Amino acid sequence: MEQVCFVDTTLRDGEQSPGIAFTVEEKVHIAYLLDRVGVYEIEAGIPIMGKLEKDAIYQILSKNLRARVTTWNRATLKDVKASLECGAQNLHISTPVSDIQIKYKFNRDRDWVLDNLIRVVYFARASGCTISVGAEDASRADMDFLLSFARVARKEGAIRLRFADTLGVLDPFTTREKVARIIRETGIEVEMHAHNDFGMATANALAAQLAGAKYLSTTILGLGERAGNTSYEEILKVLQKAKGFKINANKKKLQELIRYVTLAANCN
Image (tube, rainbow, N blue to C red):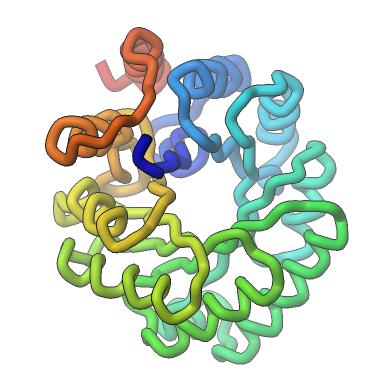
């Protein structure tokens, strides 16, 4: 079997599509179906958002799914504590890495980003959590700083780096070049998180995989903020049919999942 691990974020980034708000019951059932389809990891939500989000995540975790279940967190102790309150042990900790976002989101500098990452990851790991780290707006970041960020994440014990093309500005050629360089120069595992603003999310996901990224961030129906994210069903077929990868995915459950998400998201 080809080594491709799908990290599904329908319940987090997918729900950021305009007009979409899944109920707790819908979130739990979508997670169940994702597990039956065979995805590697389910990003269940953002605990700091409040009680309903926490309830959904707690219920999903209580199902003892085969898939890893993770929560999404900003690089703050408050976010990590909210995840711990749900019983989460697999946390994704995300922070901007482009100079424009560091300046206008935080009014900080690069050194602060690195120091804060170390502080928050240390706290989460000391609490018994497994951590992946997200590089928001990585596609517009200074490459040398992005490499430093990846090295710090790896040194602090992060299991992988999420390369986020947050504004969907990349093309496949640049994607392959950047992802290959990160892997080559830092040794960290990479997850590609593509957005579809220029219609290239699937192509960029494929390019990242060919560059050595074992993890692909996807959503059902390509849901996501603005133009959406990489479609799970689309990149799955590309890898299976165009590249010949032997990827196990339950076709019957996938069709059921697509129908359910379509109805829950009012996409019909």
